[in-house]
Amino acid sequence: MKTKKPSLLPHILKPIDQILKENQQGIKLDIGCSGYKHPGFVGLDIRPEPGVDIVHNLEQFPYPLPDNSCQVIVASHVLEHMNPGSPDPRLTGLIDLLIEKSVITKEQAFDKFGEHHIFGVFLTMMDEFWRILKPGGQLTFVVPYAGSGGYWQDPTHINPINEATPFYFDPEHVSRLWHVYKPKPWMLELNEWNSTGVLEVVMSKRDIKPYAKSINAGTTHAH
Image (cartoon, rainbow, N blue to C red; front, side, top):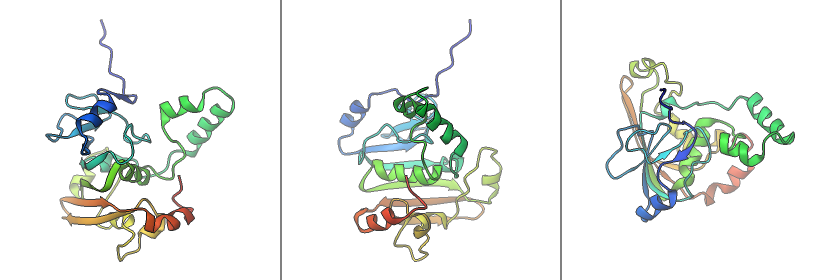
């Protein structure tokens, strides 16, 4: 008798209402935790491993968490596995056509694919982290330095990140790289790296008000 494989479609092992009730000061979220969740954290992963509280595809938006619900997000050796680019426009067009022809409903498309009109997966993911964090909440991530042996050794590493990548998310950084895509605003607090090892980054959620006009006026990073 064959054992039924667990579904990788988004589902929740613990009700979100229960998770929120248990974390009234804000969730400490461990992204892509697999079976090695940080103690005291809520685990989110695509695989229903022991210790995972929310099973969800990180590249499917939005996440099943409300706005401003997390105080801390950690992602250890996860972001290098994420798609840096945009979804295949043919797939986006196909989903729209299926909705237009009433083959599927908007609700069904959303349940299966999440928001499919996005500019880039990694940029949208960073915006999603920003959305679910409380004002001033922190995002901490560790990745193998882009171009290092640790990055190239893994065939599933597809999103290279180096010390300049965080500059694209901080509107106050002297590089002014934020103005290229104008994502949701972050404050870069820590940026430590070794070109043959890892990159460690800490960012906190900025208030969007001072940048809202600039973001709304932009056309390169629109949702």
